[in-house]
Image (spheres, rainbow, N blue to C red):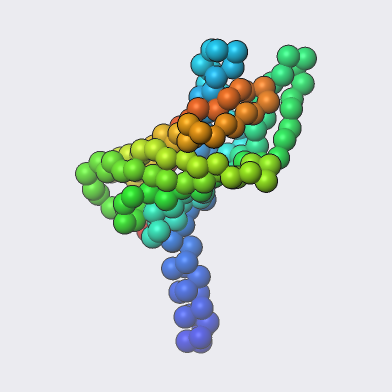
Length: 166
């Protein structure tokens, strides 16, 4: 292997370790529907974590059961949030609590999100070392109505974090 090939492979590996993509995150929306607060979990949620920038990108479809037992399928929802920590660490660390701000894009509209989060380290984890939890609230002045779900109040994310050196 030549030096150029080795340097190219080294750069690819370094870039690969800056972000982590998962399809196993748990995303729940709390919504108001006919004056009742409900929770709805989403399937096929893709979560991308940029370790160096401490950013989270979430993409999912707002699928929901409707009364006639068919499924309603809509445009994807894309959410991007920045965490108020310098980076997402996978080495041992005390629990980190932080604030977050972000944007949600749905049907050519952009919504503002704000919230809190926590990054908990799991000692002894070989592959998954941390759990990332986010509570993202929509701005009170903005209204996101998802058919079959209701008026969304907030999103909750529970995501495992892969060891950066794995």
